[in-house]
Length: 355
Image (cartoon, rainbow, N blue to C red; front, side):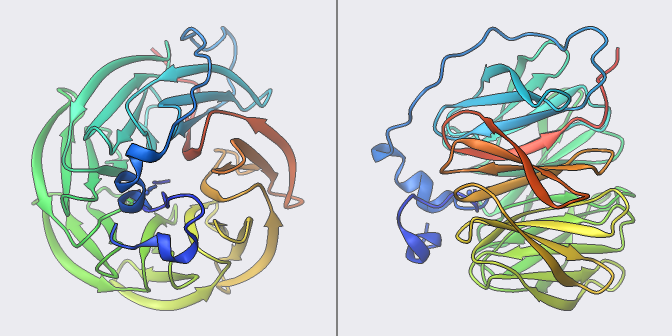
């Protein structure tokens, strides 16, 4: 979920969304990074990195804390933070490898990607990336990670076996989130300052088409069936729906103010979209492409990730320093979990990591 685009400097309002400046999430990275020198980040006590408890089969949520330079690890069975991991400076997005064994976290202020072993919750590698790495996603086989570089206007391709960048692909202006189709053939990258989406052929690592969308696209997700991509347009307060077969926008959905993160239930029937300036989450019926429910959450929701069973959505609240847990059956917040300072990205392990 992204996702620099989501990182807007606090208290700047709409003007701060993109005065040149994340998932990121791509999010609001320019304004944020430009103000890093004056943003005094608070730190939280670091717990010793600890492995998952024996016999604990619950998925874990990894949350990036922008001002703390940490990642909080939440046990989704107990909804408590098990450990806090020191990562890079100003972490934004996080993604979990398909086998659940590693988390990759983007650090736009130091141009690196931190790799965490999810069994031991220890940092195993730090990878130099491009200028302002923001969004990250993996090919289904887990062999490659695609990382958008917001300030570099390109995408780094990382070989996850060697943890080295093997290719750099030019994209649009201010690329933010990254999402790869379930068949692994294409990567979709929204370009926040170009108001379009780059479609990358992952075999040739070239951009094959560019799709115009709404104003300020920052993050996206692809339905589990691979048929559609949903793009959040931060400055338009809308979501663009792309048919991935034709690579055209088929509809535009009004949501709340400053939408950032988006994720789907495993059956593709619902999309959950965070509205940063409305302090809400819009629930979209993907059959009708209409908002059916609006869920109040914390202050400045940014990231969202849904558990593998589809029963809960975890939402990072940037200004509340916590995570709202939404019961997707009743569509209400049932738990709020304190985390670090300025939580942004969130990703959930597909299963208990094995091996």
